[in-house]
Image (cartoon, rainbow, N blue to C red; front, side, top):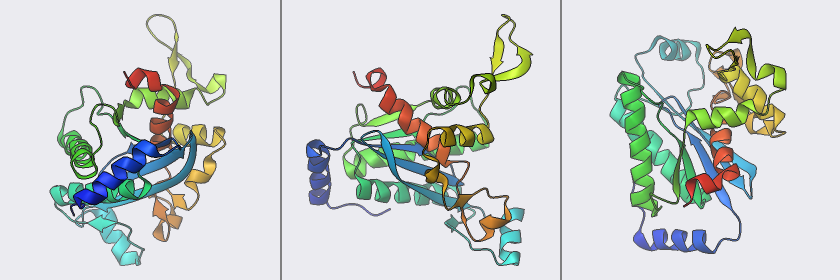
Length: 237
C-alpha cells in the first residue's frame, strides 16, 4: 500500500476541519465485497464496492471458463487480499475525505477462520486510516455493530414484516426479523435511496457475469453510516 506525502495528509486534515459539509462514510467490509456509502449532510451521494477472492475456488474457475468479466483482485493469499482491500478503501477515503468513517463492528462471540480474517481486515483498515490519512481513532473512526445497523433497517419495513410470523420468544414476545440480505435490500428501497444499488447485482445472477456484485453489501454500508448519523450522540462524547 502506498504512503501519502505528509503535506498531502495535512492538507486533507485541514479540509476535513474546515469543510462546511458533513461528510460521513459507512463501510461494510469483507474479503469478497467491501461496500462503501458516502453521505453528504445525511443524504447518500456516492458509493463504491471493492472485490477480492481466491483463484482456487470453483466459482472463480467457472467464471474464467465462461469468460465472465472479473472485478477486483484475486489471489490465494488472504494477507494479500487484506492488503488490497485496505489500499482501495484508503485511496477512496482520500478521494472523498469524509469527516467520519464508520466501519462494521465484529459480531459478538464470533470465532473461526473467516472471523479471524474479518478481524484482520477490520484492524488493517482502521489502523491504516489513522496512520495514512490522520483520522483520529476515538472521534473520527466509528464502529457500528451489525445489531445497530439491522435495527435501523428493520424500522424501515412495514410493521408486520419486522417480526417472524407465528414465532415467539420465551418471554412471549414476537421474534424480531433477523434482517437477512433480501430484507436489508427491501429496507434500503424503503428509504427512497434505492439508486445506490443501480449497476450492481448478486454474485449468483447471470447479470453478474458483466456487472459488479455488491447488491447485497451496499445496504449494510448504508445503514452503518446512517445509524451513526442518526445517533451521533451515542458515539461522540
